[in-house]
Image (tube, rainbow, N blue to C red; front, side, top):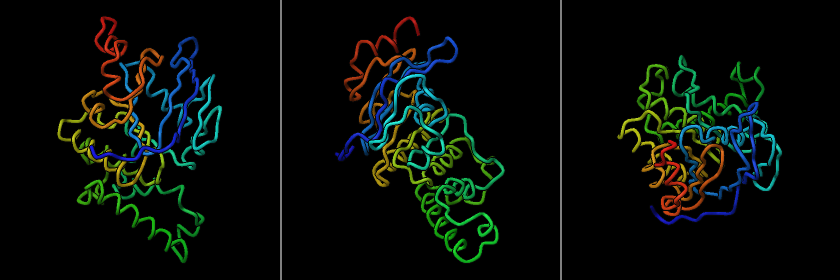
Length: 261
C-alpha cells in the first residue's frame, strides 16, 4: 500500500460500557480513530463489535463513557445528529429499499443534503429542480466509482448479494461522510467479491479521503487493508495496534485460537 498521511484523532471512544439487563456487552472500552486511516475492529462472535458501532452512531446509549468527534464530546450520540455531523454507516443485514432502483437507493443517502422543501421537490420546479440535478450528478459519480452503471435502473432486490452490498456502500457514500462505519462489508461474499470490496474500501479511503472504521471477520482482509486494529473479546479490549502488533499479541492469539472459542 502506498504511504499515506494519517492525520490527527477525529473520533475518540472513552471508557464506554454498555449492558443489556445483567449482560455486559462492552466493558470500559477506549480507543481512537485518526483522520484518513482504515481502523479495524475485530474479535470472535459476541465480542461486542457491532454494539460498539451502535454506540458510535447513536443506535445504543452507553451507560458509561463518552465519544468525541472532531473535538466535541458527547455522553451519547443521536442517530440524526451523527449523520449530520458526518458519520455514515452500513449494516450487517442490508436495509435497502428492495423495490427501488439502484440510483434511487443511493439518492436516498442524499436526503440530509437536500435543502429545498418537500413541496418544491415534489413539483420539481426552480431551485428544487436544479438542486436535484446536482444531487443526481453526485450519485452518478458514485455509481461510476462502484462500477454498477449497468444496474442503475434495476430494482435492488433483483441484484446478487455482492452487488447489493455495493449499493449499500454507495448509499452511505452519498452522505459525503468524513467517517464511514462498515459493519462486516464482506460477510457472505466469495473471494472475487471480497477482493472487489477491499479495493473499493481502499479507494474510498484514498480518493474520497474518508476515514474508515471497519468490522471484519476475515483476518487476511484486516491485515491487508488496515492501518491499525483494535481487538475485542467478550466486551473487553484485549489488543490495539498495527496489524503486525496485533497478530503477535499473545492475548489475541489465545482469543482466536484458544479452547474457549
